[in-house]
Length: 561
Image 1 (cartoon, helix red, strand yellow):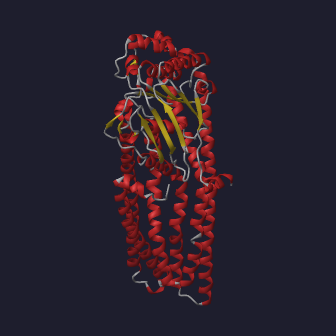
Image 2: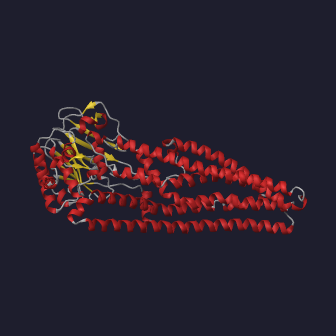
Image 3: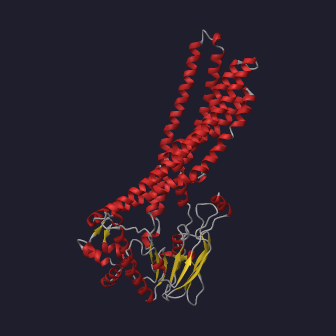
């Protein structure tokens, strides 16, 4: 994220007011700093002439100091207040984006990571807004203004300061690049740990009943230890970089002080002028020092804000008005689809193209390394994400091709079923979670449950299909929730199935039953587009495509370095 990203001001109106207030307070604090240094230098330089008015001079200095402290206190108070408002506005925007997703219309969204970002992730934004942003604005105002005041008093000292000041932001940039990767790993490990703990808590009762809670607890412990190691690495880099910045600042101020001392000894500078420059020298460097010190404390929050802004600005395809044609014939064409990632110059997937016949029982598999854009490709096919380049077409038999963006997606989603990697289950009965408002006969429900092995799960539930589940399927283990999700997909009569890791969390026997059920569904004319890392799952596909991501030459050189 940029030091002060203009996008943050656009998405949070409280940030705009905060910046204006901080700028005004910064100008006032700069003026009081100059007055305080001038008054103290005059008092010390002419103490022998102020015998009668010493009390008045001290009272004046005390008043300036109190006023400066009051402005600093007001800055801290407004920082805390504005930080809460900015975080609340970003959180509201993220949750509104999540609530407006097509989840209620048949295409569930993967919202756990977004909820995690909207809660703990944005909480880390507090030190960024309270400390780093006001200090950055103060630096932009105070450092040039104080340098001009020093120039008017002593051009030699001003030149020394102007020559050494660029070293601090230069090293800050180098240190920022050095620590950015560690900060991103720290945030990612926190999100992974939170997701795993949530899964553990959700299925704790079932795991304890089966005597399997110890293994999951050990996994959570390993993740927490990995998160602790990542945090310590980030802290070590922060302490080392802060030491470097402090050393540069100390040597710069010392060089100015030595020059002033030598000229005072030679009589080439008035005592009051020398004292004034000496008092202002630390103030010139102080804002930059504070920015460097606060950068690491706010890096995690800044990264969270960058992710929040990226999610808020992610392109969403406009919903058209044309009804989607029946998915019983024709073809689904993905033409040269590329989706840009948050890393500059990187796309995942890159140049994906395929034609999938509809109504012929074809199975197309997508594979690739983690981060290659397999799940992203499914979101593009669903119409949830607009590609950076390329597009998705529906080609009805005997009719012109239709752009997916021109269609009423509600009519499109009604004909397909999506199995995401992370299923979102609303509170309700097991039957309601599987049917989701669809009129599904009991015979189809039982057949689908038998095909996925969910019938054995239902048989052990206290009230069978009428057993009530908590939020996100609380009361079921992770594997049982996966079987429920598969049952939901197979119980309907949708003609296009989009499956993201359908056999995850299943043992070998259950996996084989599910694959047989998917093949039977394909033989009935249903089209399947599935994503998987497992060779056994991909073996049922008629064709398998390997997805690739693309990095620009500069990114490739950076990774090699």
